[in-house]
Image (tube, rainbow over all chains, first blue to last red; front, side, top):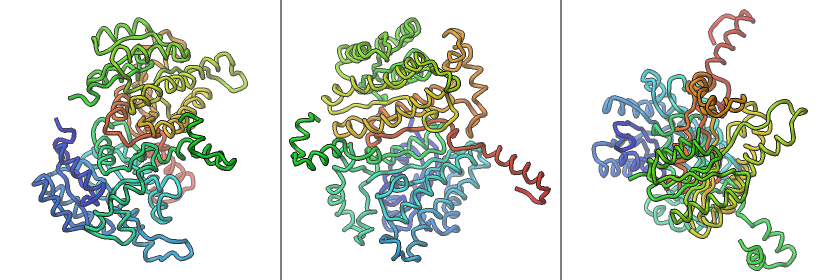
Length: 284
Length: 280
């Protein structure tokens, strides 16, 4: 039996990237899914492809009425709501702190943090009376350590991880589990979009992003949306029925630290020893 | 098809508690499993029950030669090693710091930390040569927060978490993933054994622990070996192929902090003390 048979889910940011990967995974596992996104073309195309077990609704997660409407759609069409995946996001404002554009700051925070609060708020309204449900929030390794994203993005993601812990405690007595996922470097358009490249050009740039990232994680490959979808599937399933308040890191080991041996090679090169020769001598 | 079809696993401490739960789930999911434990009769009985997909091998994890032999047994019997679950453990030495018995300290760290390092050490060369493999170690919420176990147990479990990240960093480049699981309050015989009961008597305390552990965390039930087994199965499966260096907490939310209902009650009490009107 599929692992999410009869489940109903809302996935924000479901039209592309991690969200799209999770929509596909959930649908394959039997769930009915509301694709909540601002990307109308991509979202309705995906819903058409996957058929009547999915529905696209244009949803700006920073607008409370639109988030409430996504919950209403799920309840009216399918009569229940088992999973809300607050995943919509973008890189947001970047640059040095002294030049921070506060309009950009508000835009980033509204999507990355306010959007998660709104998704959880309206999920809780229907999950509490049902006394069951799962809320999953996309945080980031940028929220765990510095250096993986812009300042505002990183601070918002740290807030999302802590919000998930705090909310887990509040909602546990209603049998609602709340967790975050912290993706590492995942091949999506977020990076190209952040450089001002949009649409098909961003899709085409994925191979450049892959080339830039592949040898960074200890596991030696870039992450793909399916890696995060797999974690979101597990968290949504009854297999994770004792897991709440956690930030699950899916990053190929990047936050485990610097590449093994890098420190030794740096020191060796300081003594004029060739890093390759040092590696060979160490036998790694 | 099972999620672990064709995989070969060694599970230390596999004869009881979390280890036994994981042996059972792994076997259900299609894996072949070496049950590595010091509890001979329980281990043999479990292997008999599960049939030829499992094999009991007496293993004291603090003895390097015995761990090496258990892994060699798996490789010889089934041709490889896909999953090494370093799970054997016990409560170990307890009491105030000034009365810590150092022989007991050595025995505790010998199993809880040395045993894990030995498991990693002997799994690594096989997994590196395969270019694939998954090492999982049982840490604990006692290694994340304070007050969940004796000093030495807690320190050893924190060390297991950091060791996991460090070794993940090394072995990732060889295609080997390394993760830890941090169980919360799981109803197993570990508590009864810690109170000095023999294994059979300790088994009888599991139902008691299910009741005693039910209220401590936001999710109002005791954890079960199956909860940890499910986490281990996910980590061992290809669904987690980008997960390495992670300490996966499965604790019903106990490490998230004080219970919501407790905080509400405390807030109301404070309000009453201050004789303030209104609701919390």
